[in-house]
Amino acid sequence: MRMAETKLIDSQLSYVLNGVFFTVHNALGRYCSEQQYADAVEHELQCAALTYEREKVLPLAFDGERPGRNRVDFLIENRIVVELKAKPVLEREDYTQVLRYLRSLNCKLGILVNFRMRTLIPKRVLNSIA
Picture 1 (cartoon, rainbow, N blue to C red):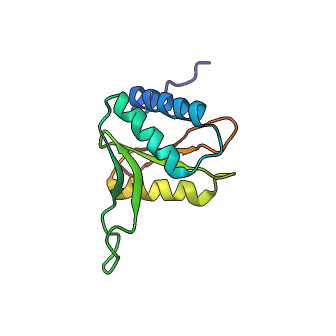
Picture 2: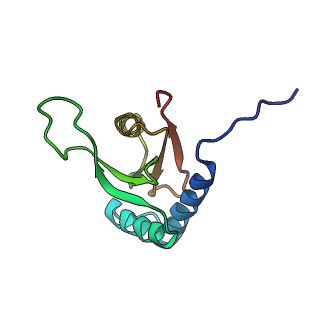
């Protein structure tokens, strides 16, 4: 019995981004701040000649919301949301945050990266609505 083939969303770009994340993790290790990881990721994105926006402000979610309250760490090639963390354990709220960002920006794929882990395991978060 053959398993059905599945097509990964943005597989080529995801592969390049994973290389960026592993390069940063190998260079900085596990105990830097989230901003230090973001600076290093930004440098690697520039080296890879990828188009990105850092700390992109999300559209307002409701009337009366203060502008600039919600920002995604990186929007890559205007289609992949990248959220960086530096904490002992990812929580359900981290995944929910990425999903909210995906829906707000109408993107299909988000990548959640926790640099504090001994072994780096970027997590793909999919928006089934987009």
